[in-house]
Length: 83
Image 1 (cartoon, helix red, strand yellow):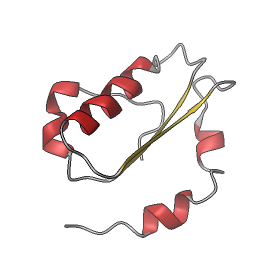
Image 2: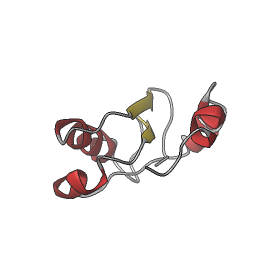
Image 3: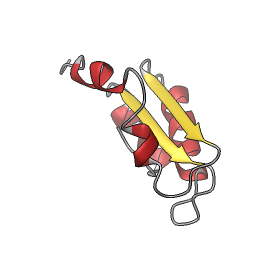
Image 4: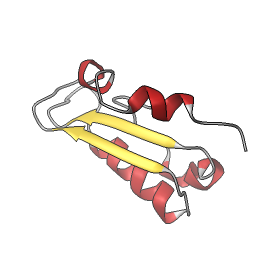
């Protein structure tokens, strides 16, 4: 559940089996949203099946405020199991 994250898109195949719901604020200038967008795209291209991305157009770096209030987040999170 990365919030305001990103990552090394070249390593996405290593994590394609991990369910991901990523969040980012469009106005974030601390960690630019392209990092999250690129990683989500790389995961999908690597064959990940459970990838969700939510971007908040009016949020900056504190998008965790919105993410933690996201309907369905905690049921989704606690439904995850190791393969």
